[in-house]
Length: 288
View 1 (spheres, rainbow, N blue to C red):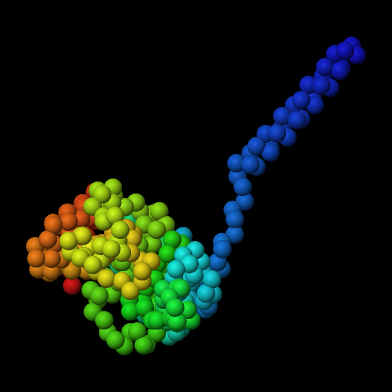
View 2: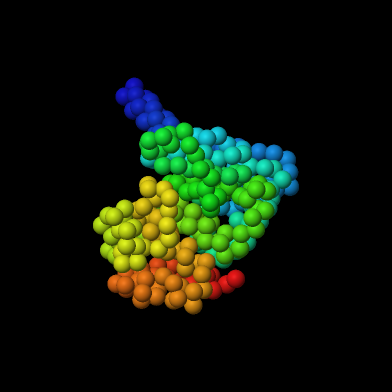
């Protein structure tokens, strides 16, 4: 009888331990969510409701109050970047431009896959190549008012100084498309197709001396920009902001595209967006 009681006691302890283990195991499968890195809303204006809805839709934080660390985080040492705080009177206008010159052209499936986690709205963005003698403390306004890194998309249009210039919508579409696509490829949300990489020059800095022959389009004042990421993003923004007839008379013209590399890369980019995302980049470019 005593032996039977001991067995019952042991079995009871084993069942208790199994129950405790099961509870632990179940708890481990349902960890508490981590708090967000940023807190919204940052104010109490009507556009804050738009920003909250945007976060809920894309899990993306639009910030108009941020530190220099937020824009310079993970920026390579050969570049200096800073941003002036957004003018509150132009935040809503900038949000509307973001929608009308970029978001409205792309399907939700694409936006959900590629939307940056952090989007900074600023009055202007200033950059410079770091380390050049005599320019260590100088920063120059970005002409496009955009900046992209692996963690950030910054839009420096939230100020009257930028908006009063009344840039054509195609130009704004080009600039924002470049920054958005560049962030997508830098962050890994989008992979540059192998066919494009195979057509890239071995050394970008040297290739800029004869851009057409080396399959390059567009320019940059930032040395660090010269890379496969810059190259691919430049093609995407050119195609999405110019009608086919214009491209045929400029970058695709045999007198510029002397080796046919630009036309090959043009086709690769168009096919990639069409096959991967169901996006006709040239159809976007053909729109006013």
